[in-house]
Length: 85
Image (cartoon, rainbow, N blue to C red; front, side, top):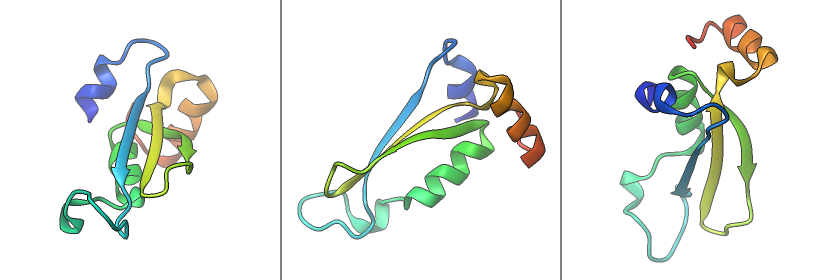
């Protein structure tokens, strides 16, 4: 994901749409699903910060990330957390 962050254009975003771990019905196998907390952690480690979380889908979660250095205030938060930009 670090490569994705580096390749984003200014103002670019990354969207993740994944089945919730407990979603029923046709979906990817539950053992292949990632909980949203893990996605947030992994993208934060790559220098991406969660900007939006949409809950309108009944069986999926929808997360939108942007580089931590997109705005000065976000850069400061990333540095304070020890994340690389």
